[in-house]
Image 1 (spheres, rainbow, N blue to C red):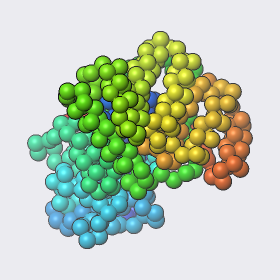
Image 2 (image 1 turned 30 degrees about the vertical axis):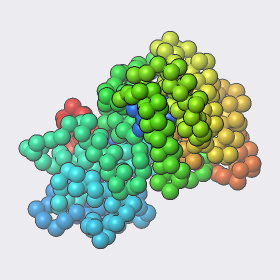
Image 3 (image 1 turned 135 degrees about the vertical axis):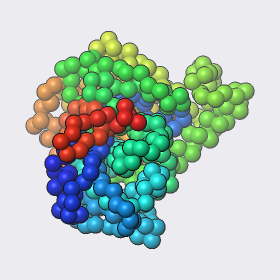
Length: 394
């Protein structure tokens, strides 16, 4: 995560004055539970150490100004409806509107790779809101969960992505030593200690295949899942959340439905079971079971959720055959982006690099990888001040 000193220097270089404060929000990986958060499923993400850092300074007038390294060569942009009609600038403008901020200087730096399924947009949503809200501590503040929902809504409106709440929630409430078993229906969570991962390394592999969720099939898959769930609700006599019904009952109903509804419900039910099985494996330190569940998850994402690609499938198969890899799967929204893999530590760097060269030769895509470690949830900081958890402050 980019710290106060570097962030403050960046801010001063472009605005000529020191920022008042900053908010840092981490990215996340999802151990398991893909494409079920927007259906009310329970998921198992953890926050990671890279993230998005936002520095701000309030102004009595003059509107909103933004400088960031995310939009290419850093330069100051004036934010209004005319100059920020879409994309990242429109997203920041919408976040400012949601915090009722009309005039401020905003600087954003990130060490979180963009477009790799690590939730850079969700981290931005939490960090921007946190920083702007901290400029007015005497105001009536929203709850931490309300800030997560606002970030989700801003993604829907400004970026056109029909995301669930998992990414924002994990960025807000994440812990260094635990994953979060998030009940996205109730907006609550249980901490799951990560001691069962001892001796393992979490590796994120960038497939080299760009992922544009709003322009991809992601929103269509979301609509298909919601439509299938509504039909299952009708056929079953009604329910609020699908987890209220026995999975065997809903699976039997799904088998009477045409494709793709049948396969979408099948993925939802099987992935939900895998989440709870993974929690049990993590608590028992059953590492082979964790690897098996990752492999099963990818098969379902490929066949039933239909969010994988030929290139991703090739890369998963190569990783699954690599000594030391317990299991790998597509991570994030799909249609490109990154994979999650669990390795026995330490990773054989040379063997993994050789594998990615074979992948590049087969798919003409340049892949890369990084090892990630858990990190804390979003925090506030400033000159001479320590960190303060954003969730606790709110």
